[in-house]
Image (tube, rainbow, N blue to C red; front, side, top):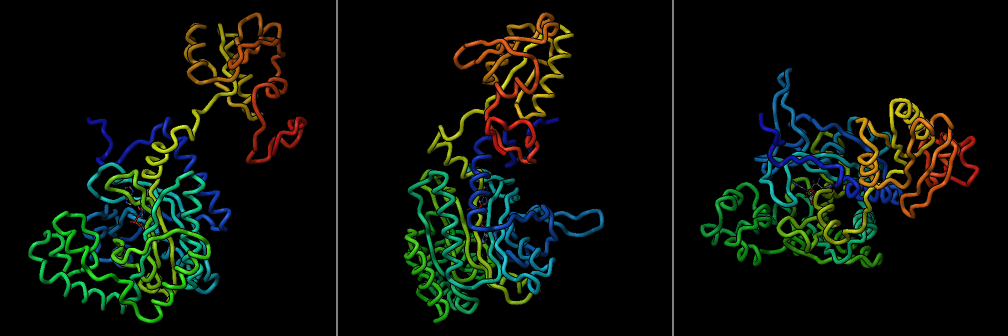
Length: 439
Ligand code: HAM
């Protein structure tokens, strides 16, 4: 049996985890600051949600979905993105009548059957936000400001925001015709995908990365120059809001994005560090999506970014941003009695909040000391028969090498080996925080 995971799917290993935790913590903190509430939607949805929501002619639906029949004969799909599911949840819970304005965020895995390469996986992880129920251009600006603030919090400067408007459904129909006319003369010299797209959805041609197609794409008309009066006013208001908030953007008239639900504002945050897969964050408005799923007309806007790409950029730009985790105390034990006492002491200390580890393989002292070093333990306590009998031992500070005699009492030791901490359950309220430790 092969021990490889499914192609394009990866283990995220313990050594990489601090980077993921950093990125996730920044996302959650920014959601708190901007007042977005978390939503968790299922990994599996009825296939129809994505064929309708994301669009029949998109790459995602035509060639990238993991779709299968369950035992009841229903067609299900592993979610390729989060927006359609969030719009579905909006209707599931009757928010269109009960609480029509929603600011939501999510974190979780998505699945697309794409060709794997650096920054492009078949199982990947997104962080994203969605605002439902408001059409005001200030909301577009808030969503973009959120994306900028998140990147700033992570210390990522020098990113570029590409911004465009693709207008309403009528604007897009007219723009498609314009593109068909533009590409008609050159389509014979363009790639097979573009030839197919010309009929199906010529907007997709603008995403083509083939070098032979690029010259024809670069001379194509821009969507923002062909908007109806309402969409043009919305776009100029979005730009004015971004100017007021001093947020940088480049209008890129040929940015259309790869999902069919988009209307009006679309944007991407790109990083020069990433090579071909340079988009850190992609988003935009989807004012027709909820209606497409059978709900009332409901404006919406949001973005999503991939954690894999974000972690790659963070590791490259700020290799020292995360420190390897450290253990508060390693308890080395010699002999069965000491192991028993050590386990009891470790359990009690963990109950008080300290991170503690012990030897589970009855190894000699030298190997246990190596283990303590490998775990970057801040303190070491060696327990043998004498220590257990006397109820006292020598606590070593591993950073400066100093030692002190201590009682083998969990409360006393806890005071010495671990720094103030935030108890998520408030469990150290009594007793433990005389030294000013939080909660
Ligand atoms: P998307 O552009 O398909 O948009 O994906 C957003 C981000 O997810 C990309 O910019 C990239 O960082 C990451 N991503 C996408 N595919 C992969 C992959 N195969 N491997 C690694 N990372 C990937 C959406 O998904 C929309 N739902 C965004 C949105 C939210 N629009 C409005 N609200």
